[in-house]
Length: 318
Image (cartoon, rainbow, N blue to C red; front, side, top):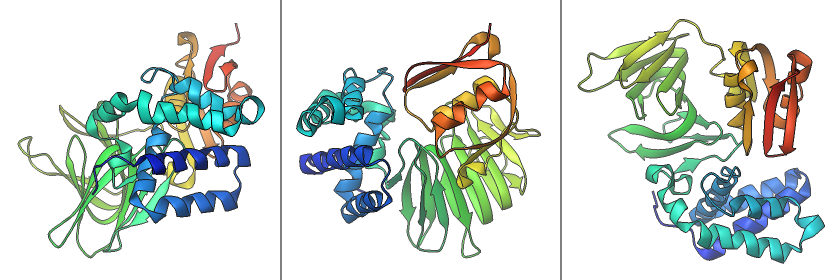
């Protein structure tokens, strides 16, 4: 795996591709051309991930000036010539945010990962032994694949692994080493724990120095943290649904639902404290998070307050 930074030419090309995609209205042919450019060279993918990461900070919490640059992109057709937008974003991506980009995510920057996804993106790949891996939004992994082991390091986010009978697949998270045995499971690394859900087969939990190995059986959901490993008897969200582009909830709190939706969109999304505990059940499509939010006022006694497309707050009707 390369850990170098993308060259300036690749960064500029990534910016140009993002401008084209944002102006094209999701043209499938242009999206395919961009995908081919990303796959052509490792430096292209690094540059793309670097630019995508700027989009994840639109709320201005970490990069002064990034929000302005990206809003300029959003309105570049109406307000600025492309060269002006390119120059502004280029200055942020290549100069103004250099220190932040070097330290973000405790060194696990997505542009130095073997595989990574941006906001709202899902990506699949296959290992040489036939193991299939799918990454959810804002996720990153590194691979150690040789004659001795198949190891996937989950650096951030969420992944689904489907492994065959050839040999076990190891997934290293912050809280444990997971060993998948001919089945399918999802691992999600949250800020305070790792969540594991098994749909087929079984998964072993290895926590050296923290007790005996434990097993997660098919149909089970577990939480792993610094205190131990616990089976969750009830869950408020289908852990596998995102692989089909869905959020499926079962009596989930509104504040927790919004936290999940926010993983698939840029900017701030929250709610007022008085409605945080309202409950929600249903099947929601992830392809357009903004349209998804419009369902809430038809389902719950709430309204949407939208300052910009990147700042949305759900509030009570009173």
